[in-house]
Length: 100
Image (cartoon, rainbow, N blue to C red):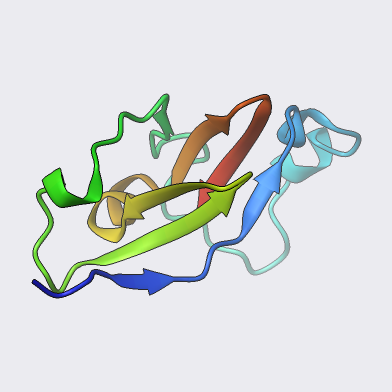
């Protein structure tokens, strides 16, 4: 069986990211910007459930978005992230968003 392909991850660690100073300014669109999907219309994945890699139902050629935090590995299917774009997760006391 082939190993799923890995994609490098960019994580945002912490809470309250969208509520900081200047959040209200982001409601205005830049000039010449065309918004296709209104903000907040793509549901995030919250509190994801995981299975061991050997039990994951992914095809061998599947791509995953992978991270390791404090020695604990997480892998998120890019097929899932193409529909949701954000996974809000937690490892120990560290909360983070995996963003695709």
